[in-house]
Length: 255
Image (cartoon, rainbow, N blue to C red; front, side, top):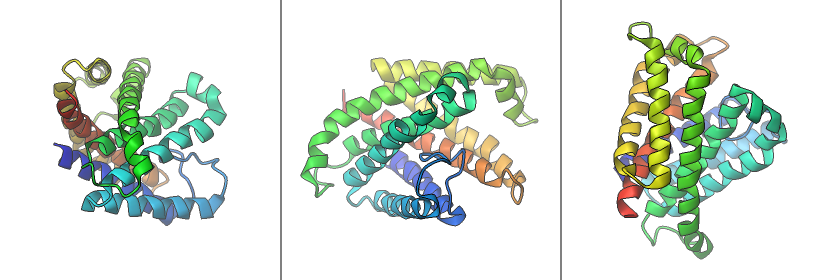
């Protein structure tokens, strides 16, 4: 479970890095850096290359604790320093809230992944010493983020229902069901009650959404204005699938 979570999470990080390098600027729906990040093209290229390297380290399981910790810190700092510059959007706008809490949740997942890494998997003692605290912090970050995502599904149920593939029945029910599942998983992870089961089921749900919803939408949007955003959303879902499997393994280990 931990290996699957690490691979899926690494693939999403690598894809975000490739997008940064390919487009040469920060996209609205691509975590962690928002479009108004200073540095322009140079910053996008630098962050893209860093993410590609870190994802390769995770895939190869080399210096994985270091890689996961650095990824978590980058995501967390981007939220605290950059996304909060538009704090009003986070409070009042669903899109702004989602764009801030997606990297926030990814930060928490990266910290949990660092805790799962072998003790000898970092050559930087400072990072190794900070990992237990960051892992606990990561659990609460992910739990709170899932609660926010779940509430969002109820606030914007009609919009979520519109995204459900046409061949699926009961679109509005699925929007509410997904929201309830996210809230339940957030409570389980935050309280450490049934957190392993909840995380596993959440991971399966994200994988299914990646396959049935996001990939078809991304393929349909290719060569259109929504191309980049749809692929970003797809790999955010894949990253959350990996994060969920990471927390399933982390919950089992930390008992």
